[in-house]
View 1 (tube, rainbow, N blue to C red):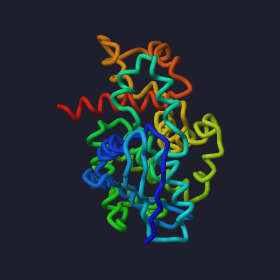
View 2: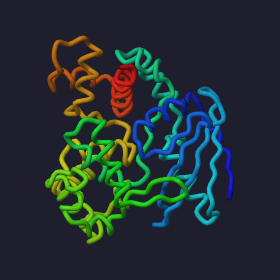
View 3: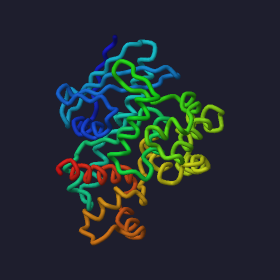
Length: 294
C-alpha cells in the first residue's frame, strides 16, 4: 500500500464533487471521511485508488492511496485529469463573476468537472442514459454494471468491451434495456474490440474530429458525442444545447414560460465561452440541487 499527498490550488470544493458523484449509485462515496474509491485501468490493468480530501475550499489537499507501486505515477497523473487538479479553477470562477451565472457559480464555487474513469465506460454510460430521466438512467446503468461487470476492492468496474460484445440482446432486455439500446451497446463494444474504434487516440483529436469519428457509430448522435467530449475527454468549451437538463435550467434561470429555443440558448451562452463546459456543469448542478430539495 502506498500513500501520496497532493496539494491543489483553490478554489476546489471536494465535498460538492462528492455530492455530484453520489448521484451515481455505482460510486463508493464516504461523506464522513470525505473519500471516494476510483476504479481505473492503467495499461489495461484494473486498479483501485482511494481519494480523501484533507484541506478546505481555498487550500485543498488530498491523500491518495493505492496498492500497486508499478502504476503509481501513471495513476496519479490520470487522477489529476479525472478530478481536474491539473488546472486551477480560479480563472473559471473569475470569468463568471460578472455573468448571468454568477449566483449559480457562487453557490457551487469550486465544483470541478470530474471525468468518467475511462473512455469506454463513459461512452457506454452515455448510450444507456440517452432519452431516459436521470434516476432511471442511473438505475439501468447500475443493473448493467452489477450484472455483467465486476467488483474489486469495493469499487465497481464496467464490463470490458470483450465481455459486452459477447452478450446477447435478450440478456440486456432482461434488465430492462430496450432492444435498440442493447444493440447500440453491443455494437459499440464490437467496434472497439475489432479495432474500428480506437479510444486511446481520442485525446489527440480535435473536438470536431472526435465528433466526426463517434457519430459514424450506430447509436451515437451529437448528444452522446458531446457528453463524451465533456465527461470523457474534459474538453473545456462544450455546451449541449439539445440537452433537456440544460434547457430546463435556463428556463428556471431566466424565468421563461417555456424551454428556450436554440436561438435563445445560443444568445445566452455565447458570452460564457471559452468555459462553456463549466456553464453546462453548473446549470446541471442548479437543477440537481432543486431535485434534491424536493
